[in-house]
Image (cartoon, rainbow over all chains, first blue to last red; front, side, top):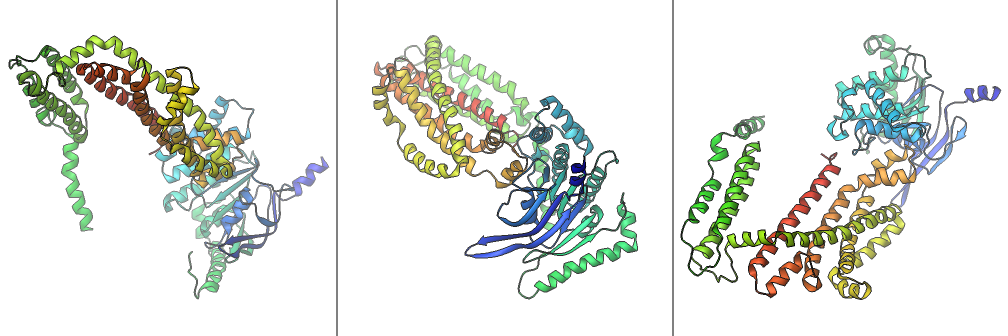
Length: 279
Length: 327
């Protein structure tokens, strides 16, 4: 029991001095330099930064897809090695397999973590999660028959149905139109917050949308670019459950948002003078 | 803005006429005129020098075809589809009309080489049991060789394509082997194998293997990396990766190779059958043309055309079913 307590105290994800160098046409450039932060059990952490700050590289390292990284990463105390069953992933595009219907996509994901379940049981779980993301009537549709927002709902349903401790999300809503993005953010928030009966998942959420990061996160890691380094790690001071409309109207929200914007623009201002700036 | 409006105005009448096909566009067509003309021509007296013109057979054929055409016509919802269908039928009527005039009615072509179409039909009916045996033989050989190629080339292509280092060497090897026209394997096949049938299966296997193999390899090598990443983060096992991710992701390219293999197979088999077989459609054509029986030769040609179209149609339907998830 004492060991369990010790494990409990460990951060879920511990990243220490992560440095990633890319070799590109004779010259090497540094995508990430000395990045360190932790994600606690049940904590929602957003990583924000301008394009090219290495936030997606950071996530591919955590996904286990990018392996040439220096530094130390542990997941529940264990060193990170490759992909893992305790991490579920939602990409910006193509999380789903186009040749499987949405419910088969989800059942396929479940099959990779729960070999003990029968096909029927897996499909039943898939259906309940489709219901949860509002796709109850779209289980037998192929991804190409769904809108981008619906595809992301299904991708989230799969990640949740796999019931991994950790959820890694790489700009999952940035290709969605503004109106649907708001709907999806609220859906994610609701599903992640849950009803208090189950422990919350640890989430690492990459975005370049400041409002999205504030609404969703417990903690925001701001990266500067070229190379990606941690500018600041800021806990989000707003209570949960959060409501977008009351949140945005509050004075504190404006102040907090300005602070983040300031970090953003400082970074961009540093880079003006030759290089192209993309927000 | 004006451009958009113009486009909308221009598109409107087209949409309307496509959805509402009136009776005139459906039934008052040149195709039906050609049918009546073809029918009328049949009542001209046959030329004295033509033996057994079997005009009744032609009339029956034309009437049944017309009945089917009229029955199918209401099914079409779009003008383009209906036009295409009626044009094809119209071509058949026109062709038969010219054929009838040149052979049975005026005997402008040498009768031995150009039998009247009625005679071809009658001959087809008479030989039907024999023809069926030949079709079964030919299609059986093709299926055996082709399926053998599929069950070996696809797994091998998947495995070698996935192990990319071996894959690139295999690409060059397959380029070399696929550049050998498979027909030149026949003499060696005859030396190796005991019967005509086994040689045919062997040659068709070789001829289909390389395109299917090359299609599978290029399919695997071109699977989108985002699809692979998506599978990797799900921690799929190696067999699952190959069979449930890479295989479906490369299916479109695999089918390209299969289609190529299938069409080469028909060319090869019918050629081979003309060289040394005792049955099969190529044999039927060759055998009767050696006797100067050109009615049966034409029957054979037409039957081969129909069989190839039928097999290709079925295969394409299978392909459309398996790739139904593609938009």
